[in-house]
Amino acid sequence: MTVSTLDPNEPPEAPGRPSIAPAAPRKTRRRLMSALRASVTLGAFAWLASRIDFTDLVRAFARLDATAVALAVAISFVTLFVGTVRWRLLLEAYGAERHIPLSMLFRLYLIGGFYNTYVPGGVGGDLLRGVATRAAFGDDRVASTTGALSIVFVERVYGLVGMLVVSALASLIWPLPGVPDMSLWALGGVVVAVGVVVALGLAPRLSNLLPGVIGRILAALPRPRDPWRFLGVFALSVLTHGLVGLTGHVIMRVLVPGLPVTSSLVIVPLAAASAFFPLTVGGAGVREAAFVALYGLVGVGKATAIAGSLTFWATQLIVAAVGGVVAVVSPVRAEDVLACAVERSSKLTEP
Image (cartoon, rainbow, N blue to C red):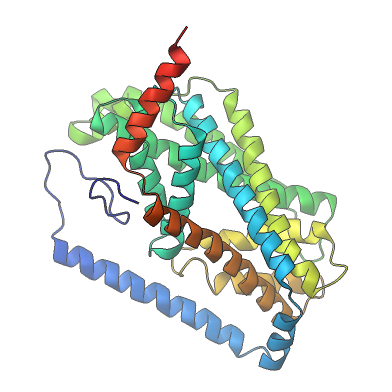
């Protein structure tokens, strides 16, 4: 993926301002954080390894079949497409000046998934998507970049809310032993999602009270133009995490014949949220521990749960790797997005 000379791990600096921190200390901090993530991840795996029989783990993997893995990968691609539609709906909800074709947004979503998965930090792909689509919000560099990054942030928030709602609804209708009622968590998530949208809408009013770059950034934050579209964003977020649960279930049902899909709809979205945990590499180790703990509540053995979790992770790595291939074979530059958005917008405005 080529977007000027942007490093996906570094936020864009304000025009005309030097970097506050010297390059060497920044690199040292990044290396220390990477070492910490690797240590926590390895520690989590070591703890799990001390509590399972590797013979059982090998037997669990032997029960898997290629058809289940292929189906899980296919569902993951569908999930990414639904996420792309949600992203476009958010751009429209915030009144993007230019329309970016869905096909280009999907390419960016794939490439962003590669950076989020394979580059330390887990947010490089989100920064890249935001900077690459700044053309949707005009030609002012600060205003357009701020607007596009804000949309990606709101999308992340709604994704987290979708996860809570799916798990809460599934556990409410089909309660699992040992899993507490998540209704309040889901309600709290909805309140937070609404609060984020309202806060972003009100923030520009504070721009005159704050000097310099902060004031400019607040003034550039986009305002909601079509609130009804947020209902669609919410629905797509719920669908996205329903598909995540289905992806995990396709794998687990091979390992545990007769396992109810309702159990996976509660467990897998919660376990997949481990990707948000900042002190591991892509949630590795934490996700496996979550699979062991949660699937253990319905009688699934530790080795079987770990085999399912690692296979689920493998499907995510495969999909993310496809994004890496797209970035190499068909790279997208910010200039390409601008040209495509201008062409698309001009066609839409033609009589």
